[in-house]
Length: 490
Image (cartoon, rainbow, N blue to C red; front, top):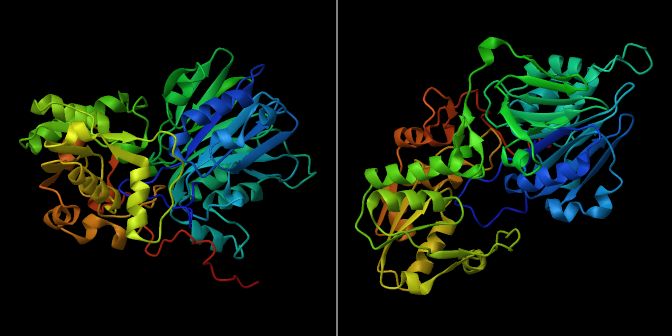
């Protein structure tokens, strides 16, 4: 899946980190490599550490992957030789394992008489147990995605026994998938099949699209839009979609009692693009309603409402509309800045925030401003923003957050750190208000957050807000869990 970089943490630590993007296309006669490039580009926000794709021409699977953004890894020169009718792609943000070329995806294995490639969005919670059961020594696999590929490969028929009928990957998945716990939206391929799988809780999104002469799988609907595919539907939690020359069919490899839809609520708060559709709703509209309900729940007298780019902007528009306070721009985001790294001193960390965001002085000077954002995780960025606004003359700064306090770590594919690193796990709202240096601070309630999404009866995982995990949470989970395995005895 997506695994966490040990030395590349972003300075923007007031938000949960991304959750990886997966894409797949079955398109005979179509430029599948170029379609995959466009799909991954639309999913770039979900992971910026590495990018890769695998392409099949029916006989050979070719993989290209590297560290960096989609446009750093691929260009016309690298795409031109990638001919075929079938491809999968991946953009990565790490949560289990280090940020290295070895952990870039797709993962590839060549068991028996055929090979397959895998891309993973999510995070397994029983990685160590699975590796120990399989008797794997430390260093055998470097990530939970690598581990899944090993388990699948072990279920293929032995090389040369004549039993392969082209459905080895599908049969292997039926054996392996029920053993996996945690979050996983997979795209997989062999020489002739494209497969999409969503875990029984549906923690991470995955959807199906239709091309004129093919089919598409993607983490989010904008990846369908950009290549001209028609949205068919979201893949159900616990469902496996198999696509080949005959079309697509649905399989259900998990026991029905394990199927319990729990889409990560932060997909709608922060992670997903505003033009994505989840649970049949456009994310932008949900974020506007979050701002509207926040204005009702936590009103304040002010002169201007501003959003923290990018995810705070729709909510700020909603807050302004419901409160009657004029909406205005207060911060300009440098759209061309790359990843910013954790600096050794507070002064350098503050400068890093200034490189990414800059205040509009004339809009702010002398005004009471309401700053709307989606979350506060560690607080560094929010604190720097408040100081910035004070320095350019804001008379009052009121912060409004469109989610409840973020108190618990995520084990399902979002990098949030430990409880010790989470501001709200260690401070009351009043203490956070003093720490940020704001005149007032308020969070949207969980009830209003779910009301804003307008998907009654839909299931959500809000464990990061409540501490109520849908599955057994690992007690001592770390990003280096595979490196920490004790050697297995023969």
